[in-house]
Length: 183
Image (cartoon, rainbow, N blue to C red; front, side, top):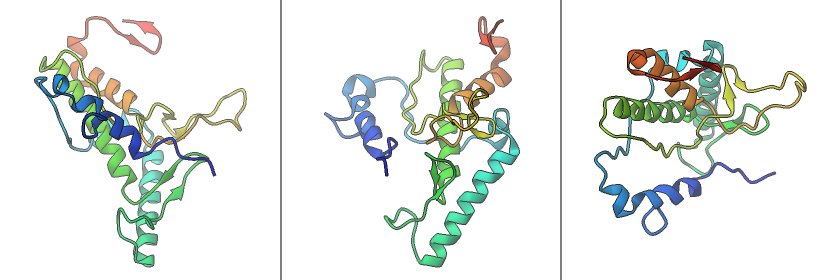
């Protein structure tokens, strides 16, 4: 089995105890805005990007993982916690949807902070970022249907943030590009 690219070491490089955590250096911590946690993205924000059937499927897989954990006496966060494979690269556990929705919530909080001029730019230290997933999950190639994008992602956080921005701040956007068409 291949070693999983998504692991806690990738986050520690960004937010671990200095000197390893790049974003924990004094120059970053002195910024005007630093959020260490956020709410889950609202389902309405998620459904602007993903099909309900896909979200329901992910939630069902998470429920099944929780049932397996309960039946085996495993607890959340345990090394024995059950994971369910949903594609060749992606596994989910009992809390995967919650974590993915919270990651999308971080992006939405960042959008709000930038659009309300609380900061000029934002960086979201979230894993996985979600850029490999489309409306129904891992993306297929029309030329080669057997080839899926790499997985690891549950929700497309970048697309959720873009959809949220267009829905909530359309009047403030001076220039943008949507689906390859200049606005």
